[in-house]
Length: 410
Length: 137
Image (cartoon, rainbow over all chains, first blue to last red; front, side, top):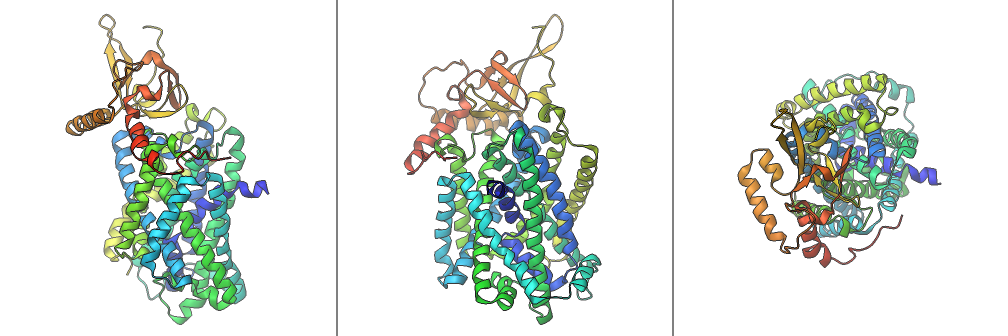
C-alpha cells in the first residue's frame, strides 16, 4: 500500500498536466474534430515530460534544488525574471480556469449557480494550501482523480473495432474538413498540455516537500513512469470516447458537460457520477498544483523560504503569494470569463515559454557538481532530451503565428 | 588571500540560494563585492550581496532599486544591531559551504533579505487562524 501511495506525487502532477480543466475539453474537442489523428502528439508529449520530469526529480532529490532555483542560476537573473513573470502569468490563467472548472463541475452536479460556487471553491483551494499536509493532499487528489479511468471503461463498453482504432491512431493524417494550420494548432495545444511547465515546477518542488534524497531516486523513476503514462492514457481515453460517440453525431465540444456525455451514454448514471467526481478531483488537483506553483515560482526565484512542509509561519511570503493568487484568480473567474478559452490560451502561451524552463534542467542534470559523479545524464538520455529541446524550440516559435493564422483554432 | 578557492564567480556564486546557519532559505546571491589586489592585480570576491534592491541595481534598474530599499527600510523598524554592520553584505569569510546552495554563518534575521518575511508574518500570517499547524508527516 505504501508503494502505491508513493506514486501519488507523479499521479497528481500528471493529472494536473494531462486532464485538467482545459485538457478535458481540449482532448474531447480534438477527438470530436480530428478523430484519432492527433493521438500521436499525446504519445510524443508523454515521452518528453517523462524525460524532463525524471531529470527535475533527480536534481531535486540529489541537491534539494527545485526547478525555478535552477532557472535563475542557469538562465541568469534577467532571463530568469522574464521566465518567472511569464510563468507566473500563464500559471495564473490556468489557476483561474481550474477554479472556474471546479465550480462548473459542481454546478453541473448540483444546479447551483456557478458564480455562487466560485468563491466557495477558492476558499476550499486556499484551505488545502494553508492546512493540509502535502502528502495527504497528493494522495487524496491523485487517487480521486483516477475516477477518470471510467473514460477507459466507457471506451471498452462502447466496444469499438480495436484494429481500426489502433490503425487510425498509427496512421494519422489531416482530416479533409480541416486545414494544416488548425491541425498544427491543436497539435501544439496537446503537446503544450503534456509538457506544461507547472508540471515540473510542481513535481520537483513536491519532491523537496516530500523530502526525497538520494535513496528516493528509484521512487522518482516509478513516479514518473507510472504517473505520466497514466495521465496520457486518460487523455487518450477521453479523446477516443469523443471520437467514437461525439464525432459521428457531429457534436463540437465546447463545454465541460459535453466531455462527460460519452460516459453517460456508455456507462450510465453510475458512470456519470464517477466521471463528475473524477473531473472535480482533477480540476481541484490542478487548482492546487497551480496555486502552489504560483508561490513556488516567485519564492524560488527570489530565494524566499517556500513550501508546506512546515507551518505557514515558516514560509510567510510564499503563503501570501499563494493566497493573493487564489483570490485574484477567483475575482477574474467571477468576471465571467470562459474557463475553457482561458486554459486554451494559457496552454498555447505556455508552449511558447517551454524551452526557457526545460533548458536549465538539462544543463544541471549534466553537472556533476550538482548531481555527483554517478548520477548525471547518460548519453542516450541526453540525445533524447536534446531532440525534445529542439522540438520545444520549434513549437515555441510556431505557436504565436499559428494562433494568429487560425484565430485560436476556430 | 592567496589560499582562496578558485571559483567561477558568475557560475558558482551569483544567483545561488543562500542558507542561514539553521538551514533557513534566506535569499539569493544578488550581487558580488569584488576587490582587486593592487600588487598582483588579482581579483577577489570579498562579500556576497543580498537583499531588497540589490538585484534591481545589478540589472540596471536603479530607480526600482532605490524605491525597494526605501520601502524595505520602512518594514524593518527595529534598529537592533545584528551580527552584520551592513545587513545586505555577507563577508565571504562567513560563507561556510559553497555548492548547489551556499551556507552562511549568519541568522536569517540578521539579513535585510528577510525583513519582508518577518513583516508578512507580523502583519498578515499572524492574523490568519491555523498558521502554526505543523504538518504531520
